[in-house]
Image 1 (cartoon, rainbow, N blue to C red):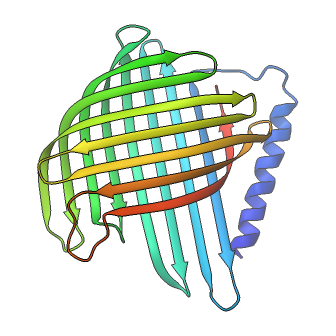
Image 2 (image 1 turned 30 degrees about the vertical axis):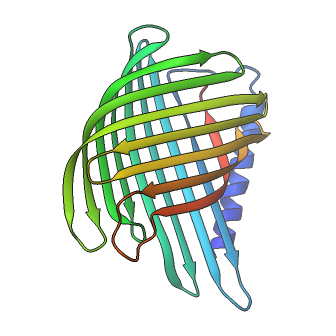
Length: 242
């Protein structure tokens, strides 16, 4: 049943791409975004199933830039859930100049099998666009704020946090884009690191394929809990706007 649903969604995206391809100059506005979905089902001696979805919505007008990101993933082995994680983040930027900007970030993460069942960050700071060209974009940020953490045993804490982050984009060609983001949130009790490496290619118009590798690490975890979680996602993407 899930395989049929995935095929239907894939066909829907392809039909949309053909409709957009017929427009020589599609209208562009302040809104842009993307939607990606991936699914893998393996049967035989062992049953395994994994799925992931990611959505991005951006609004740019003048000096103001808004971005909302949502991500979910799940994995099961022989009908027993082995991974389930969610992310919801909102980022606001205001340009002081073409290169320097202020930002505010709210980042919520939930991981039923990770070192922490729930982590939230509220950050404000300054960013700088170090490289801006047709091929390469490189941004760096520093900020301060607060973090709330809930461990798998139910214990909670709230801490002051310092954030260092950066993101790099390489437009390899008209149909291929490489990106790398890295964020480190440092508090007295724990250091949280998240890295996302991705490669996106265009298949037909706004429909494309993306491969991403995510690393999440917490420096201070409960005994018997691994500090690092990683996952690889392969998604069919639909993009609109810029």
